[in-house]
Length: 460
Image 1 (cartoon, rainbow, N blue to C red):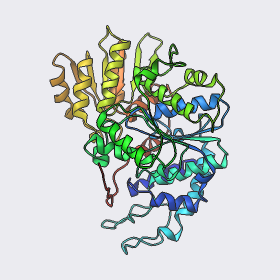
Image 2: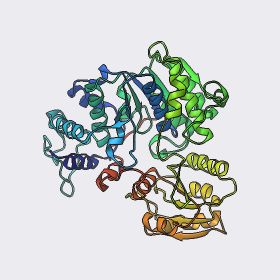
Image 3: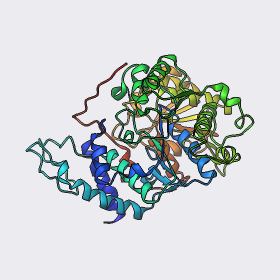
Image 4: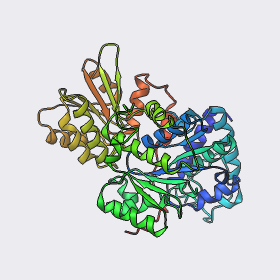
């Protein structure tokens, strides 16, 4: 198998959609020898800031001399970003080896389909089923397979610790088969309502599902409706809960420390990361210098990332993809560029709350270039147009056929902000050669759709 064939195999796993539930992942992990039992985890959930908080925790422990695995999603450009050890993406050769192993596990009779319309056992590589065929609902999805791949990789390389980000939600997320040293919930905002619920209480309940009995839990959630649920669920487990607030951002070593990640929200993420390190001090002791050194060196692209071109142009990349993220970006632009009205390159997925996002972001702009996201789920520029015009009557508003067209139009503009989707930010960073490019099918691995068999029991 070549690397391109391995990526194609993962790409074809998208046929099985995305679904909640832990049964598949437990079964697949058992076939793989339950590698999670040989690892220590910090499990991180939340609406926004999960990746940044993971990166901060990872950087601190790496500065302390630990060998640290990092599992995050989605990737900006290349699949290997999802699975890293000491911030080195998984090598292509390891991807090939792991996919070869996973294919053997997926050939196991345990995945045989009960429906006669589907061959059993299913042979791999996967083929698109004939019209009218019903896919086996129990077959592992892309994310379930990648989750177990990561576990095998981290266990094989004997990581001291794994920073383990949920994919979506928490309670029924494939990552929730582990028992972590600590469970971290960054915040609770509106996103993925079609999966997690229409109220902040429902969303908080799903995210609180990562809390484990007797293991410490931490959160920076400040919305009372959501925090009440997290407090209740921690008490029900029971698990000791620490609530981090903005007052913690003014305590050492954060006080006076300049973070590489911009924005006041990142200081709260940093306070949450530091609280996690303190709570686990007995199990994972770190030198006194490690927290400051780790935070000072942290890198997490696509989050209020500012770049200067040789011509003096300022480029800002931010993966804001929900209303809370858009609000945070708006505050950041006003703080860092108070006297400038940027050119905004905006592309949003149609399953997001794009109306609210347009209303938040459009007033920032002097010039607004609407673009499609490189995704089947993109909202067309002409769909965004009317809402943006209503939110900013004076803006120069242009519908573009592609991101490339928008970047060409913005070449002479002094301040350009690319936002609305992490997918769009990743494409822009690669197109501008700020990160290495990857084949299109690696970017397309971020695509997903719900499995038809999805059922979700919610509580409030």
